[in-house]
Length: 250
Image 1 (cartoon, rainbow, N blue to C red):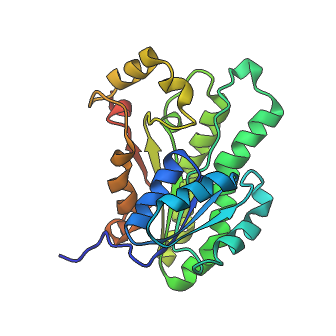
Image 2: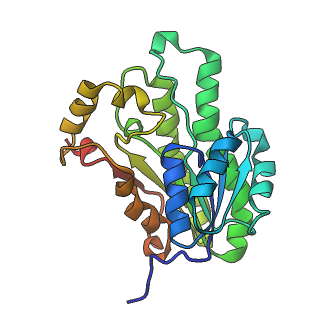
């Protein structure tokens, strides 16, 4: 059989590569033979990630919170290896504010980083993907794309938007060979979910709500990421893949 999961030699751009899921997926793509450009605000953490990889990697320290700068960010991300074939929008923020405490600044910051930046970065990278006739965009949805959580109104609104944005990206660009899909992780131990895993009772309660009976590990994201990054998913676009152990099935 042809190796439809092969991404060797592809150029990948991963936002949020300094920590958590973004860092893990940047390493997954590098281990699979892709040339990976890691984007994040913290240069020291990016360099730490790069030192742990064995493949061809580069870093672009940048502020991803300003959607107006994404054309410049795309240009910088294209310098090390050429224009990216794969974009993983993993950077994100969750302020965990109750609805009555949400400020306009916090709301805007959440929507900018979680929703606006992924779109405008993708928009800046799409022309080169269109010229190649091949591209993969992987956004990050959430359990809160479908479910309401306490203290999650701004985050949930942004992630609900990611779901619709992903479908609209597919409608706009898939005829040019560019697929757009989203991963929606369940509970994985990251900096963003630190407050959840710092509470053993809460973490255990979340695990009990899955069909499988446990929370996620980074290894659970390897297969879905390679699937959506490769020719294996050539006829899959506009979809949200919940990697949640069946949390949303119950």
